[in-house]
View 1 (cartoon, rainbow, N blue to C red):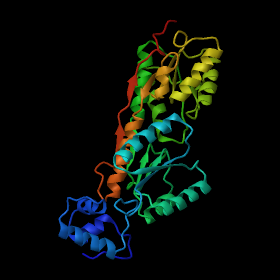
View 2: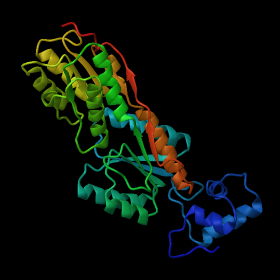
View 3: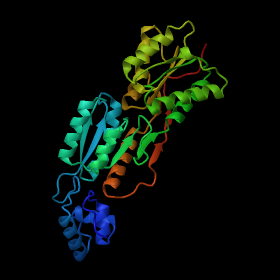
View 4: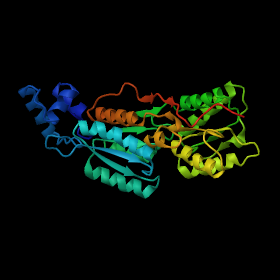
Amino acid sequence: MAIDEDRKVTIAAIAQEAGVSVPTVSRVINGRSDVAPATRQRIEELLSQHDYRRRGARGGMGASLIDLVFNDLDSPWAVEIIRGVEEVAHASGMGTVVSAIHRRTAPTRQWLQNLRARASDGVILVTSDLAPGLHAELRRLNVPVVVVDPAGVPSLDVPTIGATNWTGGLRATEYLISLGHRRIGFIAGPASLMCSRARLDGYRAALEAAGIPVVDELIQPGNFYHEAGFTGGMSLLDLKEPPTAIFAASDQMALGVYEAVRQKGLRVPGDVSVVGFDDLPEVRWSSPPLTTVRQPLVEMGILAARTVMRLAQGEKVESPRVELATELVIRDSTSSLSR
């Protein structure tokens, strides 16, 4: 079957015309030796005939690249995702280009221009909305996309990698209830993010299942950063009847709560138990070490990189929606209610 020259030439199209599998074409592009000479010649002729240049393909066709795009890079959370992507990219001899687009239009346009210039193999978007315009442009460029921790409901044809945020929120709150706490404060993440809403819903579900009223004054807004944890913590501790435990929707906010507790002349966990969410490397060295919900950030980066590489090779993804399990990690920032 001949390739329609009006469409973007793909590995799958080359494979179909050559009468071989997609992995066979991929092996030729990547300079592998385990292809029969006649088959290799036929594939190379088709690649040349259709002026095919796989984005970033090795074997003399350019540097192999994955674009990893964040809204912001000012969080150790982002570093953990990068670690996972880099682990896979390094093992495959690929490079990683890390960008931040800060939710503004101009940087997004600039990033798209750079993407076209460097011809990356694929794009991993982290905690982002895949806006229709951006999605359409990436499709036009024939660039495969994977979204990690999507902000909103993604397009049906874009694979997503996430974590069990609702379950994490539920388990953290259930644990505090098991320690005897009934007034449990919650500091939320950005309301625009699916992961934030899921953690809050898990918190509410645990309280309701235990027959504990959900009290609006015990829920404070936040943005995942230290300052919001401090501000929310101070507001909660200023209540006429302050909470005996505070669950922050991120580790950074939990550490901000630590400072609020300190400034109030109180102690963690003697006066206030504190739970975070993420299990960033730094929190095991905090004082006291933080009880938190482990989000498998490195593993999410690994899976995202493997998925986008498979898409770049023309392979299909069996499970377009993947949620990796979260886990409650109990340390010294929580204790049984003593009052």
